[in-house]
Image (cartoon, rainbow, N blue to C red; front, side, top):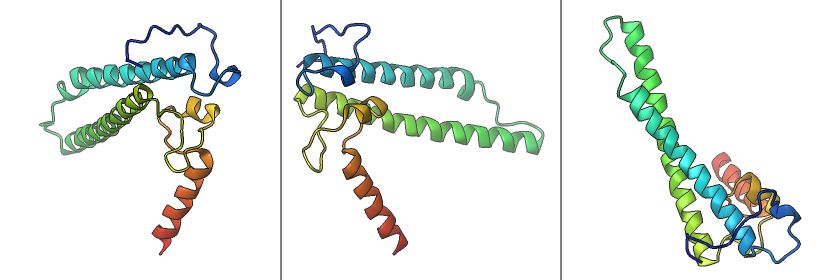
Length: 144
């Protein structure tokens, strides 16, 4: 399926109430549109940050406290933007999965990921059970 899909998603569509096949064309298009809207929001916020915050910041304030505060704010903003850049990369990868017909299935088990989980976190790659196992393993390895 290409990114310029001709499938129309009804305005009141809820994939959790869809009684059709898992990841049918309407469901896929619903998630594609949600991911694209999320990515566009992140990109818009990033542009606003660049134009308002980062370009207009004067880091050479005469008062050391003011300068330190500005530098801290600047560093925090850059970290936030870096996290958003990584999130955009995940969104793009997820859109590729939709195009490849692999979206909605757990990378670990191959089982469908619940629609409720995908609505809450459209970039999820693991089922809730697999994610919980993964997090327990990480915690165990961290505690060693």
